Length: 111
Image (cartoon, rainbow, N blue to C red; front, top):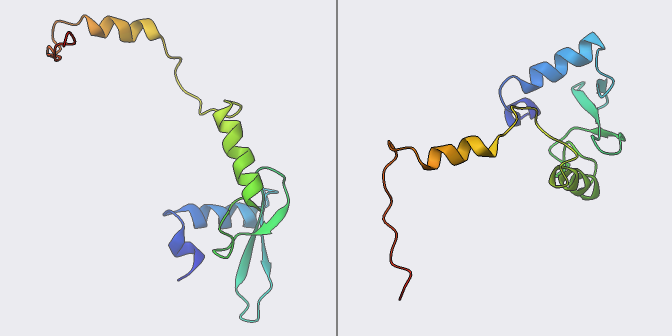
């Protein structure tokens, strides 16, 4: 099983294309094993340390568990965000009084 089989469809091809075009400083190919197979080197998203992108690294694309947890913490602290439409909570409140919604019968709370 190769790295290409483990990645989502098209991901390996995108990484390879970027490395060959030289547009990305985060990814590069190096021939380093006896079989002449290419090894993908990437920069850790947290500390930027160059690491081999391999199934041998359980924290990939991070270099370590520490960097992985720092990234998770940044998401939790909302330092990272996926761009999207602004959420207006008042719009959702209007849906509660929509007459087309089914009525939900809740059990009696006065027991």
